[in-house]
Image 1 (tube, chains in turn orange, green):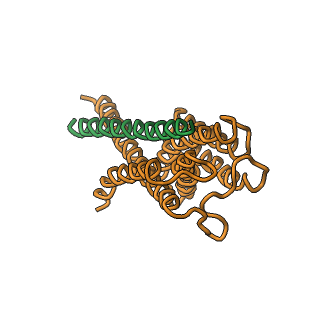
Image 2 (image 1 turned 90 degrees about the vertical axis):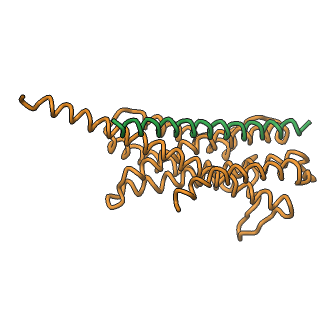
Image 3 (image 1 turned 180 degrees about the horizontal axis):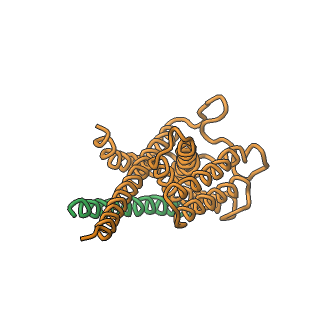
Length: 240
Length: 41
């Protein structure tokens, strides 16, 4: 059942993303203020949600579970690593699509605004996490180091979220779901925006599951190779 | 004029996600074949 669901996740996410593109580019009307540029809003916030909350949130949760002795498992470490790697892709796309939207709207590709800078900092922290994974170490030592790094990176998420409230920023405040859970975008624009969140969340989930499987298969291969090497070494030590 | 920015945003985003997805599928297939070779040995 679980295997079938994860197999379906890829095609479902592809269909949902294609539907979002079709609605975003061809069905929804241009905005009164933003004109055609509003179409970028159907991808940028959804990419950002995956990069910030889904990726780093999942990595921080799995890392905390790894550090907790009762729930310590290499599964948690692998899941955190998968979430961060996929999150890096989404974070880069968040910055790129934001920059493409910012050029005609603000007149600049980039500005050292609190929201933009803190998001870029998260990308640097995520890349640092991935670099830390490549430092040679015992698997559990590496997992512990990386778990701490993921939790440190997660501290940046509330800073990114509240940056538009705490500081004067060029980036607008809440766009869709505002305090009191009021939904500010209606009609086909609202539905397309909601669909984009579902589509990119499904896409993110499929990517994390696939990335996790690669790690499981690779590690099982390594373990097998290690067992073979140990067996060969033991047989060398046996007197004939 | 602005539709150029929109098209660029969509092409870059969807293109990157498609390329990354393809890389995951290829890596998964390689890992599977390597794992099955290991188990055969």
